[in-house]
Length: 268
Image (cartoon, rainbow, N blue to C red):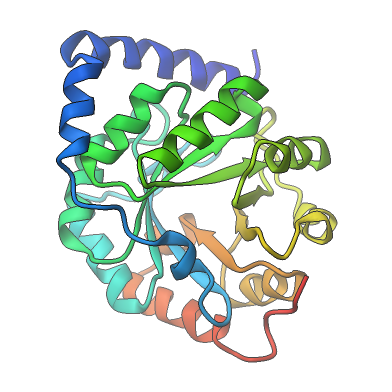
């Protein structure tokens, strides 16, 4: 079994437990009462290269990364450092996250918030909206085409945006055909957990200028941000490099400053 398949199996089991506790209709009603989602595309289309700062306790490839007793407090530091979006890992078994973290972050910041998880059904979209998410992660490798199209359309109908994650040319074509407006290129292969730092350079020229391009995984500092921006990335998503930093606010600020340099971002 691949790493991705193992994670998804656990996600399905945990999802069944949550569905048994709260019915979909109840989530729909709660979601309808939520304030409108924030404009994620505007945040990521700002001048230079935007920073998506991630609340992430652990990962399958690295194990425990950081003790984060208060996800909201860390997110507030990220926002103070200039993060355009805060990403919150809500998968519990392998990443140590929860929907409670998302709620805490939403209450602590004014910037858009991403629910980063292995979303397989519309139930999880309603969970995300009720917890305050403005953006959700959809992983092409985890979804068939019908499900991918349906989830993108459902997120859009709820006022949320979808960050559609790809790892190669085939997945990129699937994402674009499904109507993705924000594409994330993940350098980490979710089946093997290996990182290919050249994947963004290969895929970026294939992403239309009308689509927001996000570089995911492997961003260790300002040098990586500059490299990704030079390939045409509109934003970078950074997790490990921030949660392990001595001063997360300062670490975000340094990335934001690098991304603001006029020579960094090249048009696709």
